Amino acid sequence: MALDMIVDHARGREWTHVFGDRFAQGLAGYDAWIAVMERRDADEFGNAYNTAVVADAREFAAQFLRELSVRWNGTNVVERTVRKLAGEAAVHYAAVADALAEIRDMFPFPQGGRPKEAAEADRAVTLLQRAKAAETQGVELLEKLHGFMKAYWSEVWVN
Image 1 (cartoon, rainbow, N blue to C red):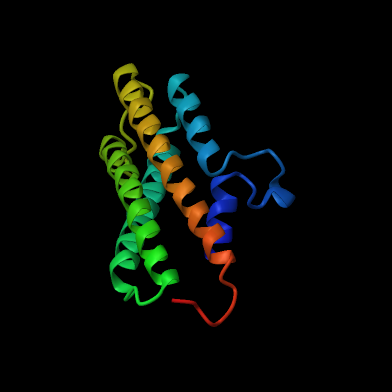
Image 2: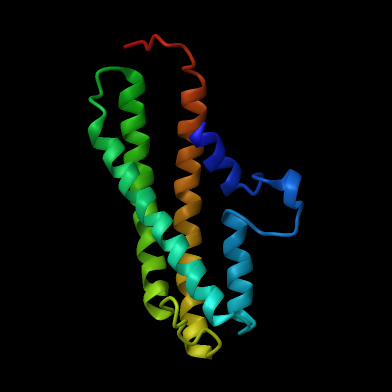
């Protein structure tokens, strides 16, 4: 169920029955964030808060995936596959977290930094593009894991 939610959010399908197309979410959220930075129109407080929340979430995603890749004992095909895909996704989420941590340093909460200044906004755009590219690769691996896990709905896993 967690993978269902993650994939739906990443692909912009979560909560659409409530919000429609009023908000960009998941990977599309990066495009909206980039557009605001390119227009030099980011609210200092809101941008700093969003950066702190999103960076924190990706840091924990990378940590969770790393731990998952080493804690499962790998005694059967399901666990070996989960370990492999989680480990590969962790690398991408670590790259996302690194890029977002740089942005968080630029725009600390609650002070906000200077997101309307050209040099700051341009650097943020570059980092957001890097984060989106890495997260896209991570999401693709999580989708692969999701598809694999759906094939193993049985309580008995095969070696």
